[in-house]
Image 1 (spheres, rainbow, N blue to C red):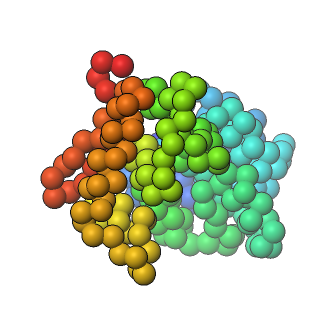
Image 2: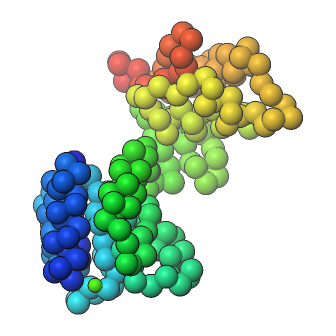
Amino acid sequence: MRILLVEDNRRLSEAVQESLMKAGFEVDPVHDGDGALAAASGQQYDAVVLDLGLPDMDGIEVLKKLRARRDTVPVLILTARDALSDRVDGLNKGADDYLVKPFETEELVARLKAVLRRPARALDAVLTLNNLSFDTISREAVVGASRLGLSRRETDLLEQLIRASDKIVTKKAIESRLYSYEEKGSVNSVEVLVHRLRKKLLAQEAGIEIHTLRGIGYMMTGSKEC
Ligand code: CA
């Protein structure tokens, strides 16, 4: 795991670098916004630890520029500003977490590990797999120019599976997402839902397969021939 550490306070930078390295991370320290952007364009980092108060630009600018060039690298913000509006602003601009200074380096390591455990976040509002596109805002699934015409639950199921494409989604995770406590779904109904979704995808030649992993869950992949 390789981390880009953006912190202009040398002492803090060294202390953070040391604890991250002790925790088993590779660390590249840079001390300003331009350095951060240059480093991130030359190397795919697993995460960025980003100070907001940098000499050449605000850390939020760095974050905005990273996201503008569609870099989805997880970003953990370090800030001395503990005003709620600053934290909300950072998260809205695409940060994954933040720590308010002063902090314990142990906490930084723990937060960073938590950020790294999260599934990759899609920047795009539209998720695609083979011929299928799913717009996460309008919640429409289309193949070419045809809408799939999915029910609300089929749409939820599709979203859950396409977000985790090529990874297993457990039946339990599907159930807890699709059914509220009042309307607990039986194991059967998830199966029925998967069956219906498969049929609709097949009818439109979406080039999508939903694999059943018996007793575990489901996995969506693109068909091999597409
Ligand atoms: Ca600073």
